[in-house]
Length: 377
Image 1 (tube, rainbow, N blue to C red):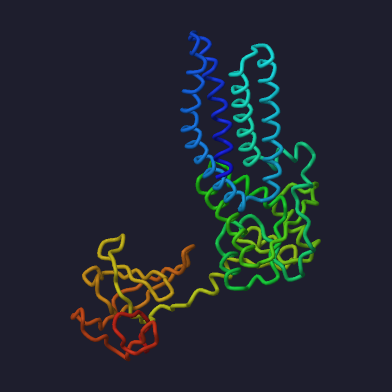
Image 2: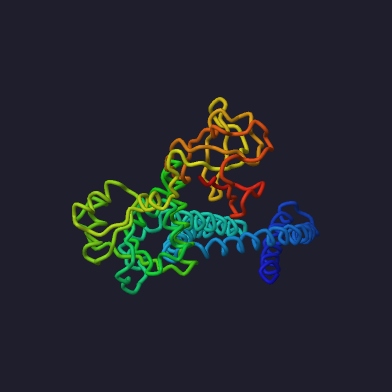
């Protein structure tokens, strides 16, 4: 409320000055007084409304700054201050030449616009701007040396979802190391024109913040390899110097790390190895919930969320317990995709008992309706 009232007071003073100016031009003995009072009253109402809107906007800005890296705030502050000074340099000579109180408000408005523009430029391209000024070292926070068991990640590992999964599972106790040039590369992709890469890069930057909130140490390593241009070779060289394992989702990077005899973790291969194995011929009991994309296909899901596509089963959509036989599986970015067909002894009765061997539901209770699971052979 203090901010709103002070802003309203300033707004009323500006309105009174404007009304007094208008009253002098209108003429008459009471013109300036009437113009000043009327303008002050209008400014009092408008100033309260605008002040409250600005107050809410400032609160939202502070909330967004909590998630903004300190280096970017510093860079944005420099460019915003530059814009403010530029606005004053443009407006003050006009104020001296014109000799009008209105020109003071115009100068303030120009300075405010340029300061806001400078802040936004700094928030978007602040690191490049400050690096051009030779102050890039200020943006690199000091950090303790990472432990030997930390993972040095490249851009592909940051932009994929597997790091966050490992962090939530408590498997990144030693933390991750993000080279400075990798962080810059991901930020550049986040601001790039490609919508897919931009979305994945922004998700990766958000994942790093979530990892920090989960207590996972995230170390930012300075770029000490200006003589190496290739990003993959930079990552591998830094990993060799620091004695760390490389975590990547890139097959070429993993292959090159193997050629260099460097320890590495292929996150995609790790996830594939952890996917439950459903060999051809295995029998499952699932609920068919919707139609598939292809004719006569039906879709069901396993207890862990993996999708099962069943051929020639569209007539059983909505059935809670359907016996199916696995044909093949295929790993995807969303999990394991299982292709199946109806079991040869699938009963014609939709609500009839499931044949052969007693089904085990997702909760482990034999023959419990409304659950999914496997049929024991």
